[in-house]
Amino acid sequence: MPRPTKAQRAAIARRRADAVELRLAGADPLTVGRKLAADPAINSDGLPYPFGYGHESYARRRPAPDDTTLVRSVNRDVADALDHRLDAALASVEELRALEDARLDRMFMVAYRRAVRDGDLLAIDRALRIMERRARLLGLDQPARTELTGQGGGPIEVDTTADELAALIAITDPASAGGLE
Image 1 (cartoon, rainbow, N blue to C red):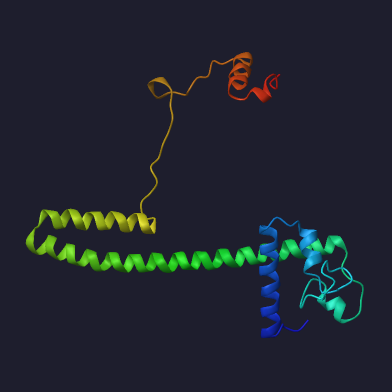
Image 2 (tube, rainbow, N blue to C red; image 1 turned 30 degrees about the vertical axis):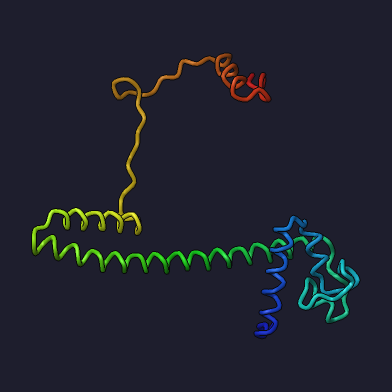
């Protein structure tokens, strides 16, 4: 199958955006598929949607896609569109992170010069705060390790019976009372 032209890619992107909008509005995938179908015989508006679902079949005068195919196509389009949006958002985050890192570099140089040249304690504190901020921004700090232990560093002992556990569950979630056997 040949690669779609620029106009075709734009039309497909529009269809995906429309599918996402309809799904966000609460339409189920089958309703979306029918609304955005290329074949007016199954399109809920009775009009051919340009590069809609089944446009290849419609162009060749073949039968329109069945409901299962429409649902699968809509779900794929919505997933692809959301993946694309996520990738764009992550790229924006990376750009912002790089910009913030550059800003921190400029501020750090000023504080570092004063700290080293003048021995200024406030500048030393400021340089350390900038370094801490950079470490958080870039994820340089290792996470704190947490370990729960019982008395004397030994294992935690649980002396709860099944009846006591069922009573605790009933207190916090009355709908599940008696669910533990």
